[in-house]
Image 1 (tube, helix red, strand yellow):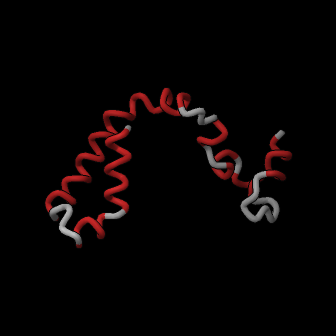
Image 2 (cartoon, rainbow, N blue to C red):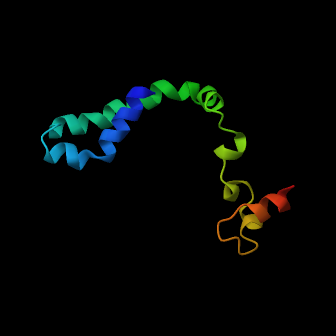
Length: 88
């Protein structure tokens, strides 16, 4: 998880690292492969990790994925309060 986090920080700021000579172009390209490998290694443990971080089922799913017609049946301005009342 730590290495994945660090790679994502470097990827998010890759321009800075490249322009300041802190990483080579080849090194920057290799990050994608490293990132994908770490994701593949961690993915079997995704549910356990989510539980460990206290991420609930509600947090894992977007309201629109559950019942998009109901979610869009009124002007909700992206808010959940009224939708949650309708679902209950």
